[in-house]
Image (cartoon, rainbow, N blue to C red; front, side, top):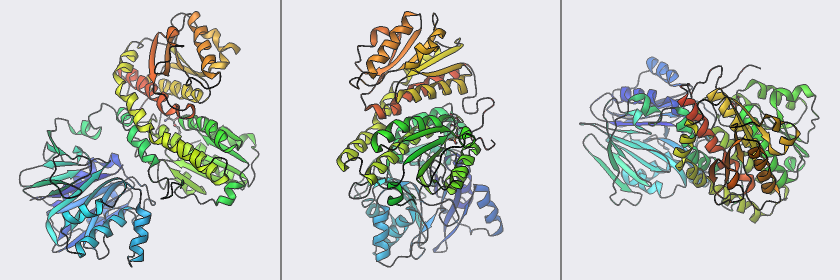
Amino acid sequence: MCGIVGYVGGKQARDVVIDGLRRLEYRGYDSAGVALVSDGEIAFDKRAGKLANLEKAMEGSPLPASTTGIGHTRWATHGAPNDLNAHPHLGAKGRVALVHNGIIENFATLRDELERAGHDLVSETDTEVAAHLVEAELDRGADLTAAMQAVCRRLEGAFTLVAVDGEDPARVVAARRNSPLVVGIGEGENFLGSDVAAFIEHTREALELGQDQVVTITRSDVSVTDFDGNPAEGRRYHVDWDLSAAEKDGFDWFMRKEIFEQPRAVADALLGRHDETGALQLDEVRISDEELRDIDKIVIVGCGTAHYAGLVAKYAVEHWTRIPCEVELAHEFRYRDPILTRNTLVVAISQSGETADTLMAIRHARAQRSKVLAICNTNGSTIPRESDAVIYTHAGPEIGVASTKGFLTQLVACYLLGLYLAQVRGTKFGDEIAAVVEELQRMPGHVQQMLDEAEKVYELARGYADTRSVLFLGRHAGYPVALEGALKLKELAYIHAEGFAAGELKHGPIALIEEGLPVFCVVPPRGRDQLHDKMASAIQEIRARGARTIVLAEEGDQEVAPYADDTIPLPVVPTLLQPLVAVVPLQLFACELATVLGHDVDQPRNLAKSVTVE
Ligand code: AGP
């Protein structure tokens, strides 16, 4: 998720674009850049690091005056966050400058085609490929609008592209597919932005673009077409948010916004993970297939929510690959003198990539000559840099301290790793792997289905404002969901909460059950051996002792319904993938209850987004 700004009008474009980028830095902040159209050519500057780095550089060597320009703040997906990979990217002769948000799935094929045609691509990004393609269309006589249409017809994946032509100062052209883009309509000036925060200090008249549309803005005109050049319509509206609300896309908290971004985040985590034959491919896995075939043990390390993602992964990875899989709290790992060899794969899960406990764990693993693979959301952070391989989760910046989309995309990355290992080691047939990938492709829709029912969960949450303790039960892959649900309630509502494996109840915890005690029960899908029935028994046992049961179960599961004081229906999905949907109502519940209690949901007391001390 990156920040994009475009401008054409009577003001200094440099100032309008930089101000817009400043308001979009929450969308990405590992590098930034600006491109202007001046005296028949492109003038640009771009720097790694926060926007302030770019501004400082521009003070030393200011860009020329211009009234047409674009800008970008990056959240890296392809290519480390450095000056070279920062946006904008230029075409072969520097006539076109282009910025991009999203993932172009078929960029490798297009890059090969360009290089075979003699193009010299200098960055690691998918964006530079688009810039070269657009400029090549100009070379063939198209104007910038027609060039953008032609290129978009060839791209696959999710993208917002914004471009300028050094020889055409009158216009900025943009396009979108599965990625946000909105037009700001001014008087004698027009704007483009990833969201309205980019321009609401100038205008509150907005035009939201639809799927597969191209927009051309000049000082006096905004015209929209589809990718084939046919006229199209955007959705005109008035923005009545203040700036703070605009940054949160109208939500009250970044965390709530990030909960609702999860369908997109899960879809983005799946983008570009298979080649044209359908075989899985994982970015920056610098461990050879032969070494992966020699792996005889996997150890997953992480902290907090990341640790729970590892617990879910264990069920999937062992089932699909038959490799023994241990899951360890990172801060405990190296102190237990773990048995590690060259054939051990240590998987480090970390949203920030900077958690000290996890970093120390992988340093210990590497000292024992084990291979380390990072699952991380922050491109270029320390943990992936010190790992042999990485799977980036592509969730976009997660601002809320409590992890939500970070967790769901960690699960997706873990599933992809398990399937990739199964593919390399031949423990699952190609069609079996493809079937699971198809199920994963349906998960964004299932997650959206849970979000569509958010109001019912909010209503439930508001009834628990006086609660002092809550239990969470789950079995199999639902057990880590119970742990994560308890953590969300602890870290947001400051309520004592504890997650248990439901089978553990009779070994002690059932003594905690008393009249009115709320217990969330995550019920496995039906038809999976006896797991479902054993969970149903556990619910009966606690209900008989007075617990107030909130049951998360498949739609239509009548077996557990009689023992549920409240029911949260789940879509019918495979057992191993159920955590992707079951955790969503628990996130919503904790977020709403914390809001009702008047807590700072984005920055809960005593917590930091990244724990960089041991
Ligand atoms: C989760 O809501 C918490 N913010 C915390 O448990 C977090 O998951 C943990 O500190 C690990 O952070 P990381 O994923 O950035 O390594």
